[in-house]
Length: 247
Image 1 (cartoon, rainbow, N blue to C red):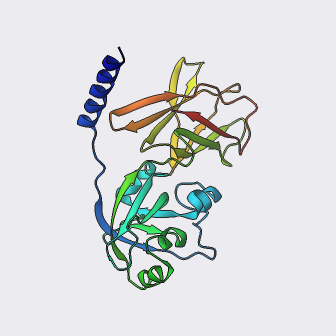
Image 2: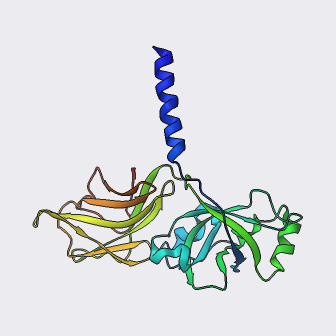
Image 3: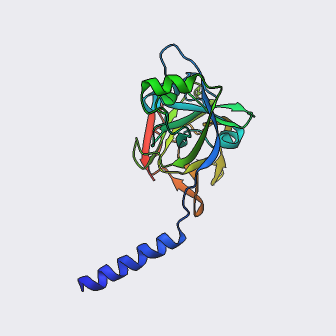
């Protein structure tokens, strides 16, 4: 019996491997920006505010339009490795997308000082890398895992009862993207979309007076999937309330 279970499990894993799409590296260039303390900017285009300054221990990045994806790329995690063997760490650095700088000159990633500092194999090597006008790199999307396999969102300061409800999607586990958010309207007996106002920020005018039910559309390797929040946002919600639920 045990052998049969093992055989079935092995067959399933082999099938998963067959259809798995490996995450390949993309060649590009990278640079860094300066901040007084080495952390990120608090006013990045994702709308993360101070969370975007300190998330991932301040190893964050502003990215090109290709990775920004009109805000869908907010919060994505990337491994970045530079290509000067005598200076570059073999594993490179891991950064979280918090901002967008538009179209670049072949530069896809501009990192915070903390993020860039981990490109070098040691502090002296990093200092040498900083003297370059951008460095050649390779990067790939990697699973975000520092908050688990879940979605975390926060009611942001744009919200004002009773007329407006706004959230910021702070974190999405794995390599998933949140492409849309909808709210259940009992009055109309249907789901209605929140508007992506900028980056990872979604808003809705004239929300229900009672509990608020949300669902999130995720883009996965297998396609789009709606994930419903298993509990409602309570009627007494306030700015700053943060919610986390498993995917």
